[in-house]
Image: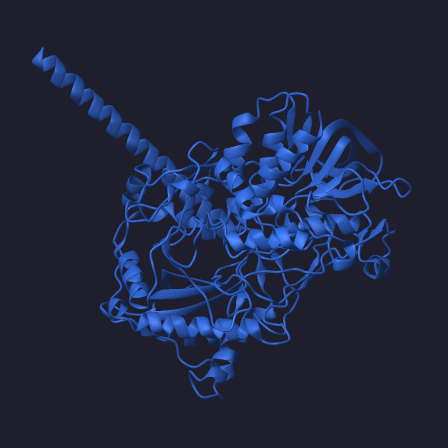
Length: 618
């Protein structure tokens, strides 16, 4: 009996070891292929791959609800509406389902950016920010595929401040958007796991039965502790930033399941593809919503697929959920937008609304420091062994996960943090194909002679500046003209508050905690700013014009509001003003920016509007 038991244990260990070895080899092959594909991939400059024969237009039947876009909000809406068996739901998505390739490894997300999962939009040349980037153009990556930008983003689960939603409610004169009313929707989607016991958690504000897994990166790293201690020295408290209090220091909560990226499509769509009343059509590019000029009813949607053009009819509603870039583009192509602009590009006007007029984005700035910085020396096999346990460097976009929320001085919204500061260990970048690079002279100055550093990063989450989105032409296959217009507010509040953020990052670097690793700012004076006294206020203003970019959080291009006279495009139930049976639901409807990352508010919007629609139709 004893020898039989030993033999069984030996066989089990051998089989398990073999299986793990095979899995690691499989993942190694995926990573090798993903890196190679990324290097060879040419990011698109338009949507010409979706061009098709304009005629004949093929009939694609009819559905109760047509959801345009299978991204973050669209996935939630399609999933929730199809819970009603009497609702027939169609999702039209231009991208594909995830192939579970390199995209599943959060730590390798830089390669996912250079892939077919990225629409790869770019701004027009800028005059107030992004000036240090090639051709003064900002990158605006947006996810393409089921799950949308959650396929390529930083996985951060961040709701923003409760006051954001109370302010929305005041703007809309609709108390259903109050924080107390939307909190249940935040909790509904969440399946929260307290995987890092050093992270502060207030369980009253978290859901544990939702479809979307949220957890912390493990294990905790020493730099998180240093960051916590540094912020404590400056008087910061430890908080759960997704509770009712945001100002303080915390650990990033992530869309992650046992180390693997948990995109919204995987959580909300893939488990329910067997529903007979839910059809998800990929590689389907929407070119127009057909709206009756007489009745102002959204009747049908035109889309291309496989070289043909199709028409699908909506029995109840069309729900536009293509994101803050594509949703306004599709509206304007359909005749809903600024009257003069549509006239200029010869699109017949259906409804005059300020579509694309209030583009907002968070502001991003990074400082580089040298010091006694060490990383674990692991080869890819060792990293994958950790990954199989749900831990290690491959399980998160950043190596460190500590974050702090601060408020700058002289704010009109008193008591509301407007700056998010976090850190990461950075390597000097080599030229990366497909990505807007810093000018060579700037990159060399920033890094001096260093190849490894610690970055302190500030995101301004409540900027005043607004930009625009306009059509390049009447062709649905041309990318729109995107003008973020960062740091352009007339009173210079944004640049002053970013300057204060830089001062705060230097204060952090000078704390005992950070001086324990001898942190020191490594960058020399930027050549374009060299006529100004180094590190003076004037120098930093020049630096900020060169180095500030978007945080890849576009929003507010089809904002909610009380009336079109105030610039609103949709009402508080997300209905397009003056158009029947048409809603917009994604980050484009934010009336003002949230002080958190936009992904979770987009999920909340999907949950909220789905409940409203289900209660509206009996």
